[in-house]
Length: 113
Length: 321
Image 1 (cartoon, rainbow over the protein chains, first blue to last red):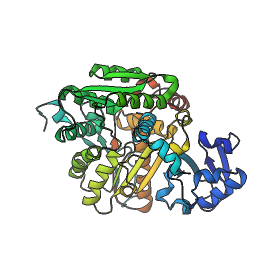
Image 2 (image 1 turned 45 degrees about the vertical axis):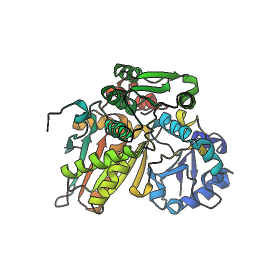
Image 3 (image 1 turned 120 degrees about the horizontal axis):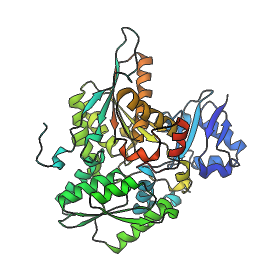
Image 4 (image 1 turned 90 degrees about the vertical axis):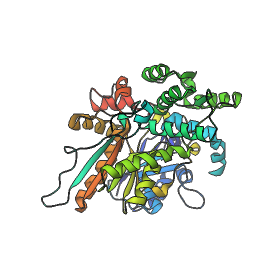
């Protein structure tokens, strides 16, 4: 069972610069465990110490957000494509503007640790 | 109604048109699955943002936060800036937009034509620099009014009070509503209204997947979720890659004659996904989706011509606004 995983620029330091890696698992949680075994440290960037997806990380299976598909329990099939993306809104400028104006950028960093 | 007292009164009331050629075919005897496009490019400045801009300004006037002659400050290079510029002109406000100096020429020309002032931040600093500049300006001018579309309830209320009722009036059989996710105002407002009125409705979000170059500028921990966003209003959320967004945008104009911007292509991609699922399940579906703006402001990207790969490359890393 092979699942293609697209990794955002910001996390490629964990994958040796690779944009796309392969993993295996019947659920998203299992896939992330499998990826972490090959790319140590990746799991910590995606999952909180409480075992949930980080608030500012979006994961999509075949373009669809896993938060509406059972989150870490989302079922995966052979040939599925998984994409990891930071949460964004309203275009790059709008999103960065919103974060800065609300003073969230420093707050969110502290919160997600 | 086709006669209005002023341009502001002509906001909303946009047409809903069927897409007979793009709607999936169903087996003989199966219930119909139909796609419907809400043409928000027919608003006064050509985008859905006119609704939010008008409601935000009105709300600020009614609450006394905005008084005649005041200055509105908005860090935006996109449709909201253009809408605000039009409303500000007609209501007698000064508008100052902050944006990186490398935004497209069309946008600068449009904003200036509407009378907005533009403060540029250095291109090299990207959007982070624009934000820093906006923050600085805001600190120096505490009397300037920031409407802040990401957390302004009037943004969502515009859609709760206008877009939602219009859709239900024009399509009482609606089963799915699909729109773009940015400030989340469209989905939160329209979605809440339709949930109250239509049992079992599915509210579906689509967002264009932003270019990797843009992403690379930021730390993953700095992601921001708009204050307006409430995940319980949504049933599903799709992130659509540039290639699919471009493909669908082109398909929309080639097959149905609708010339739209690229976020609409992403929205159509999600609408088609839910429509095809309904066909598979043998269920009736009336899928309404939002055409957020026309394609005019994106012509200079080159993404409407040439091969799909060329178009994809042309759009990679650009700001979607």
